[in-house]
Length: 179
Image 1: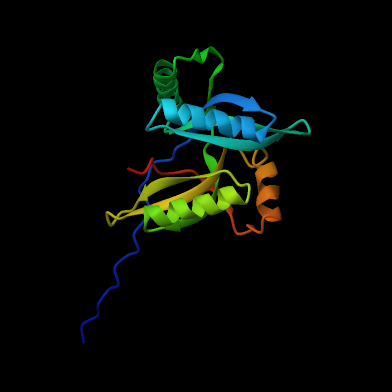
Image 2: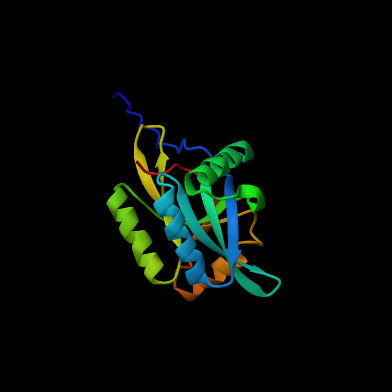
C-alpha cells in the first residue's frame, strides 16, 4: 500500500522586529496614552504604544514607535515621525526591543483587535502585528510590551499575572503592521 506523507506544518517567516523609537517616558499612564493618541493622529501608518517598565522602584510608561527591524530603520522612522508631527527628535533613542509578551494569535484581524481592546480594558496596553507563514497565510498576533530583556519585562510580567494572564509568553517580537 502507498504511504501518504502529512504536509509539514507551516513555519513562521516574519522578520524579527527588534527595535523601537523611544519618544519619551511618563510617570502617569494616562499622559503616556494621550501622547500615543496625539501622535497616532498626526502620523498615520506608524504604531505608537505605551510600555510600562519599573526603573529604580518607580513605574514609568515609555512611549515607543515602531516596530523596526534594525537601528537604521528606527532612526529613519524617527525622522519620518519628526517631520510629520513637527517635533524635534534630538532626545529620541533607537532602542533594542526584541521581546514582547504574546497574548494570542488569530486568523482574523478583527478578532485580534477585539482581543487587544479587552486587554486594554484590563489595563494591559497591547497591539496587533501581522505574522506570515511558509504556506503563504497571515495571522494576527496580539502583543504587550517591547523590551530589551527579561529583566526589563518584569513589571509587565507581574501585571499580567495579576490580571489572570499567566499564559502570556515573553517571546521574540515578529511581524509587521496589519494592512
